[in-house]
Structures are given as structure tokens and as C-alpha cells.
Image (cartoon, rainbow, N blue to C red; front, side, top):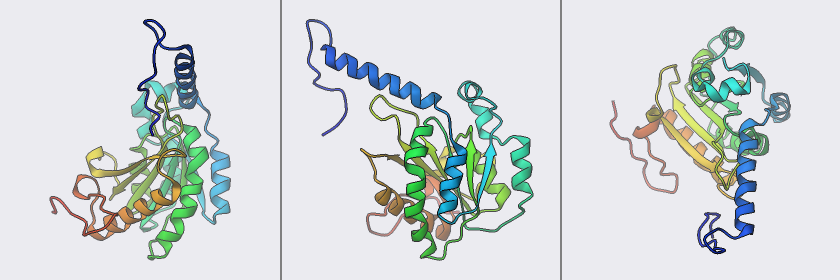
Length: 241
């Protein structure tokens, strides 16, 4: 029922050869996922096929090696990207959707556009407006704060590749932040995690995200002040005001 490594058996004092080879393969897949190239052009093209205007931006992490060694560089836009978004002015949209490579570009390539395609009808059905979608290379989660602030969105939804594990190299995460601006902490975000083929499917993930978006906009909070109660009941708001 689980891909966790339990009950693997043994050969003498060691793991069986099959279990050891499987572990080595999964470790290699995780390393490949972290170092994979991000095809932002293909992501942008797929989003435009959904009818979305797209903007391509880059963080201050010039190369992948910089991104991995300097997480701080992935939290800020480079000057050209900053100027591009600033020139768009205050769009005043409810939500800006950002697709960032994160620590697993594979996850974004495989699941992000499909998720957006399921999510958009759920948002438009409740008159939630969206800014141009942003495709961000060299992105950490906090990069969405600067993007959302520059585009004047009330909420930013960052879809980003999660850190690969030794059983899941292609997991996608969705981070929601109300009133995005630089300097926020993770306590002010909600996260829908483990979106992948063996985890949370696109339909269920889109349902949870749409619920959180609606409640965040209505209550003007995200993070520890807003709990995911999309399964039913009245959502709780903690520490209002």
C-alpha cells in the first residue's frame, strides 16, 4: 500500500541485491530531477493553448548550480524580469498563477499545465479573475511574492516542483499566499503538496486549491490563519485581525 522502504528482507547482514539496485536507481532519478533543465518555452506554449497570456521571468540565479548553492537568489527576480512585470502596472486581478521549476522541473513538465487546465474552470465559475500566467525559471516559492506584488494580484498561486524523495522524483506543490509582497514567511502560505501520479491527482488537487483560493479571497488570509476544510463543514479562521 506504500512505496516506503520497509520489510525489504536481507542477504546476510546486507540488503538483497534487488532492493539495493532499486534504491540506487531511485537515488539517481532524484539527482536527475534536481539537475534537470526547465523548458519554460514549452510550458508557456501549453498555457497559451489554454487561452492564457503568459510572461516568462527569471530569478537572480543565473545557472542551475547557482540556484542549488544559493537559495536566496531564487527568491528575487533579476532586473530584466522585474522591469517586465513592473511595466504591466497594477492589473488588479484576484489571482496570478506562477509556474516555477523549483527542485523538480520534471514535476512541472508533467503535471502543472494539466492542473491549470482543470483549475481554471473552477475559478472562472465563481468570477475569480486571473492575471497573465507567469513561467519562472530558477524559482523558489518566495519568488511568487515579488511577482504577485508587481502585478497587483490579491493572491499568488505558485505551482512548483518539490524536492525529490527517494520514491517520488516528480512531485508538484501548490503554494497560496494572500496579499503577496517580499518578506513574507511560510507561516503566511497554504500548501497543497504531493501532486503526482501516485499521489494527489489533478482533479482532487484542483478542488482543494479552488476551495482555498475562494476562502482566502473571502477571508483575506492564508497560512496558519486558514485551515483546509474543503472536505466539508465551515472553515476556521484563526487569529483574525
